[in-house]
Image 1 (cartoon, one colour):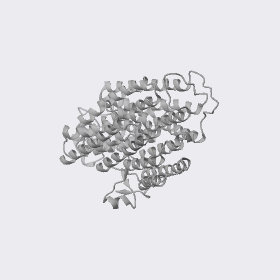
Image 2 (tube, helix red, strand yellow):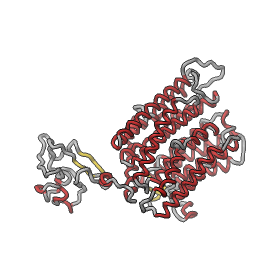
Image 3 (cartoon, helix red, strand yellow):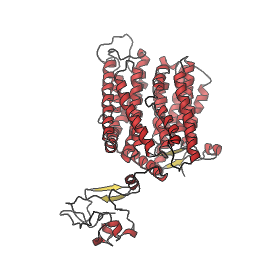
Image 4 (cartoon, helix red, strand yellow):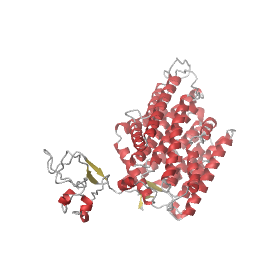
Length: 558
């Protein structure tokens, strides 16, 4: 496996862990906040460095140079690949901005040491591909919120019951998978525990009540950082997708689609801002699972793109609500508050991030939602309609919450509610990423498409894909019974070009596969070296799709 130039991954894991040990000794909240910002910032630098270093290698996956973890565990535990490369800096950015925007009114209630430890565990989780390593890290990640709930004197019953069941089902399910063998065709008894574990961690209805309970009883920052990275979807990608039969993915997709519509409707009728945000996030996270489990190139590309867009947009949306709560206390949606005049920057950012999450044109979520709708309509039209309905309801809920919190009346106060410089820095950073990703989406979509194709190839290698057309697409074939791979062995073979008249002519490979061996003529006005407008490039080869009335050049490029 190719090595990174610098051990970025280990630094991204060890730095916040070291900060947690340093801050765990106690101290003044202001000093701990300052130190935590530095450790969060250094972690973001290392995560971004890993992403940049990985991009220069032009490979599917890579690991650290001079790895300490490989010496301790005997094999590479931390690996970066196309899936996790952008997720690492995204998670580190959310932690940094959450800490940075923690005002003095929140600093005594927000544990910076446990926050840094949670970040260390999350960095390790996103950089781990080993199934048992992922299971162990997901188990550890459930502990910091539980410790905070106990420290605040809040009930642990709902959270502990769901997370305990999540961990138990995850361990039992993967133990059954390993017992049968990863390459075997797994039965419902083996897959059901893993599916149930992912559904619990992702908050799929009716297993979602732990999420609303966490937002009500924990600090907003802790709940936000525990849910927004969507580690439930990551568990599905690492534990289920490579080995699950089609029926397992379809069952997850159906339940996730129902959850997305249900949560969107619930977001419309909430009276508390925290519960509103919880259901809004749950609806979008379910859309990610829908795309992941459609297991088609377009659907998976859309899901991975939504993963990034939701992380940025709803991460910023939650931070805006948290900043408002630090000024006014817990917000309700029963009446109108009229905070727009007092906090215009936060009001504008609230609307921007909310609309970006539902795919408003010009934002990072627009292309992602479009890909998701297109894929769902191709697989099952009713599913595509449900995605559109969920996005529409979410958009109405966002606008309604904006009117309730920031308009409708005039709020008079003797204390300034305006944004602080560090809040404006967070707003500006996320605004640039949200609008930049929307106005110039090609690099992000290309990266997510490449990751989707690699993930589907891994699934095909394990024998989990049964769709023959998808297998042909992954192997570089198009929908016809032709193959344009530039292999001279097939030149002149009627079995491969379908046109006996052009046997032995390599220039006709890929274009002669039309049914009945119809002779093609050069279209008037098309030069010999011109590329037909119908050419589609797949995997580095060009497949020429020619309508019956259109000619094709005799020098078809390979």
